[in-house]
Length: 206
Image (cartoon, rainbow, N blue to C red; front, side, top):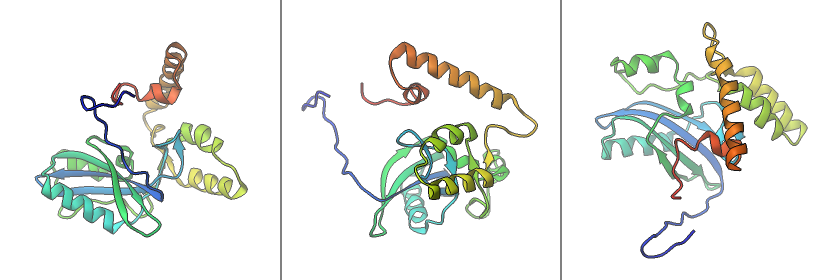
């Protein structure tokens, strides 16, 4: 990096604690849908691959204040760190759909087609989702103890695969084509397959 007055960078304080991701839908300053989930199993350092809703009233209140003060329309998602002292601090905003959509069910589709809910749509208490191929590769590779293996097994058994949808197996088979493409790109560009998987949707300033 070449940091200068002409090319400045912002340094973000490094925070430790539990990472919580959110996904919301807003319209005209109103929070129409909201899901919060903890980052537990990931592909690489950050991409979450298993999704379980968690109750975070402070975070929901923060998001509600944000969309009211900055009248957003559409998808909006945030990453937070909940410190050991219990303070929820925002890290970044993703103005797009994120994996929290998997926790909101068919009601989210109704909302997108104009059926506005009387109150904020939230995940069902038993909503559990995962990207199965990633859980059987990255997730399993991250297991380091019997306790972690038991937790991995519990998550896999209790979650549905968001790719292998009953009645439409095309996404299931297509994911292998995507994997092959990422491996080919990795070999061609000398980057990791994970970096290649997001190269068309991110910008890191380079």
